[in-house]
Length: 180
Image (tube, rainbow, N blue to C red; front, side, top):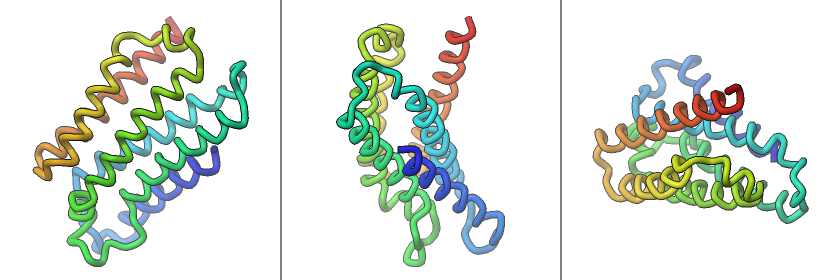
């Protein structure tokens, strides 16, 4: 599981390094970079949350396989942001817009897998989460539907910013709960 997440992070960092190494090769896109930041954060958060999962009573090989599947979905999101080649596209943003259905489809699957993951951690864990979590998944799924249907750049940027802002909000909220 850690290897798959590590591969996703590596893919993202190699893509970012490519912009630094060859600044004239591909134009940097706000939309693309917002999703790069968001999915990189998602990969790190997944690693953080799953790090201590082996201590739960329901840990089993089935749970392990589930988590590998979840990690693969996150890796595929990273791979869609930095594909092997974008030669037939006008750039990363063009690739993203044309492949947005795949991206938002996988992101929707990640939202659903997160619910299963949260339930695996037990009812105590579920009850510790606030109403924020209960809103996060349906709103996230709605954004995935909207993002997959409409290619409008401003709408896509708004969805990416909303997702990223919510991730930071969630991190701050959870860290303050851990230390408060």
